[in-house]
Figure 1: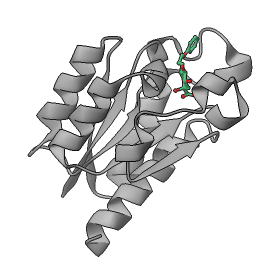
Figure 2 (figure 1 turned 90 degrees about the vertical axis):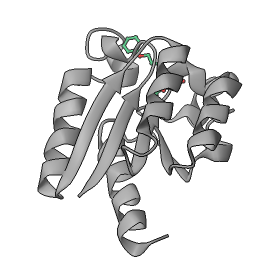
Figure 3 (figure 1 turned 45 degrees about the horizontal axis):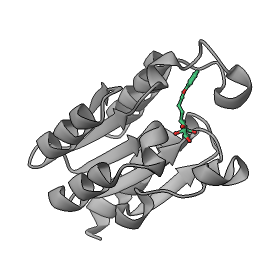
Figure 4 (figure 1 turned 180 degrees about the vertical axis):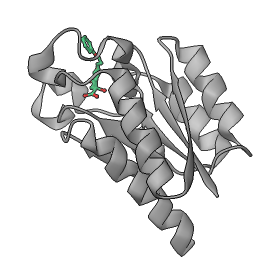
Length: 147
Ligand code: CA2
C-alpha cells in the first residue's frame, strides 16, 4: 500500500473561518477528511499534518523519507520565500506535488514566484480543495506506473 503525506503550512488552520471570498468555506478538517476518504477509496494510507512553523514543516518532510511515497504540499506563504523548504524537498528525493487553493498566478505578483515549483514534480493551483485530490491522483499514477 502506498502512503501519502498531506502537508499544510502556515495559516491554513484558519481555513473556512476567514477570507471565504479567496479561500472558500471548507475547513482544514474538511480537506483532511476529503484526502483520507479519497485515500481509502484508492487503497492508500494518508497522513495529514499542518504547521505554522517552517522548521516543523521541514522536520515533517525529513520524516516522510522512508515512511511515505509522496507528499502533497501546500506550503502557504512559505511557498514564495522558503529556500529551506526547497532544500528539504530536494534532500528527501520524494515526489512532491505543490498545491494551492487559489490561483496564485492570478493574484499579487509576489505570489507568482514559487520556491517549491523547481523541486516539485508539478503544481496544481486554483481548484480549491479538489486540488488535493488531483495531487493525490498524480502521485499514485506516477508510483503505479513507475515514473
Ligand atoms: O492558495 C493557497 O493555497 C495559498 O497557499 C494560501 C496561502 C497564501 O499565502 C499562498 O500565496 C497561496 C495563505 C493561506 C492563508 O489561509 C488563510 C485562510 C483563512 C484565513 C486567512 C488565511
